[in-house]
Image (cartoon, rainbow, N blue to C red):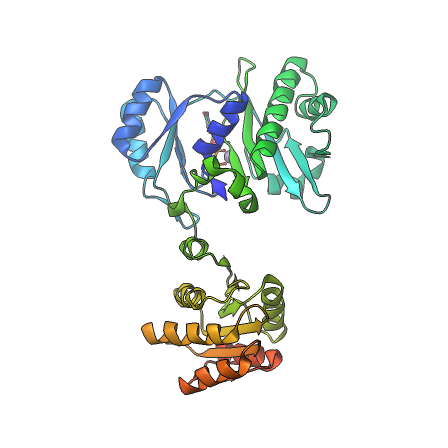
Length: 383
Ligand code: GDP
Ligand code: MN
C-alpha cells in the first residue's frame, strides 16, 4: 500500500525527522488559508502516488497566499502519469543549497532492508544508478542488530564527506528513517530530496512510503491512510471482494484458483504467444460470489478480449465455480468469449451445469489456454 507524501511526512515527523511545516488542502481557498497561516514562501505539491511530480508541473512555489491559491487551482484536477490530483500539500518553502537522496528498500534477494544514499539527489535515482552508479552507496542492514551508529555515520559521510556537522544531522535522520521503516513494516521509505539549506540545516522535503500489504492486519492506524481514489479502481474492487488481483497489460483475462496455478496459467498464456490481462486468484474456498465478482472486475477492463477460467478442484468445488459462472453471466451477459477449464472435485456435476447453460468446458489446461490465446489474438466466437 502506498501512502501520500503528506502522510509519509507525518510518520517521519513522529520519529523526529526535520520537515518544514505543512498541511493538505482539497480546494484552492483552503490552500490559500494554509499559506496565510504558514507565512512566507510556500510550495504547493500535488498529492498523487507517483514520482516525477516536479517535472510534470505538480510542484510549484508561491510567494503569497493569493499566489498559492492560483497555483493550487491549476494543480488540483491535473493529471500526472494518469492519476488525477485531488489534494495538494501546502508547505513552507526551503532555500536549497544541495539535494541528496536517502532511501531504504526491502531487498528480497538478500532478505534485508538495504539503504541507498546518494549526494546526487532531487532527480530520479534510477537515472543516477544507470549513469553514475559510483554516486550511490548501498548498505544492507542486518535486522537482528538494526542500523548501527557506525553505519549511520558511514551513510552520512558518503553524502557529506567534508562536513561533520551535516554528517551528524544526516546520520540522525538515517536512524529515524530506519525506525519508521521497521516500525510500520514498510517495503520502501524514501526521502528525495534531503536538502541542505544555505544556513547548513538538513531537511527532508519529499517523502515516499510503501507499507507491505501483508502486514496491514497489525497496523489498523496505517490502513486508515489508504486513499482508494488514488489507486487502480479494479484493484480496489478486487481487494474489497477478497480477491488477489493485479492488473496487467495484456488481453487474456484470467480467473484461476490458487496463486501457483495462476502463475502457471500466465506462463502458459505467454508460452502460446498471448499476454495475460491480469493475475487473479479467487482463492481456495468454494464461493460462487467470488466468481461473480471476478467476472465483473475482469470484464470491466476494455482491453480484455477473452476470459480464461482455469480451476483445479481440490477444496474448491468445481460445481460451485460453474454455478458462479452461470449466475454471473445471467446477470450480465458476456460480450466476449469465455474458455473454461475445470477438473477435480465434482467435475462431472460442474460439466453438466455448464452444458445445460450453453457453455462448453474442457479438463485439459493446455488445450484451454491455447484456445483462449487464439481467440484473443485472432478474434472469434465463444465456443
Ligand atoms: P517529485 O518530483 O515528485 O519527486 O517531488 P519533490 O517533492 O521531490 O519536488 C521536486 C523538486 O521541487 C525538488 O527536487 C526540489 O528541487 C523542488 N522543491 C521541492 N520543495 C521545495 C522547496 O521547499 N523549496 C525549493 N526551492 N524547491 C523545492
Ligand atoms: Mn522527490
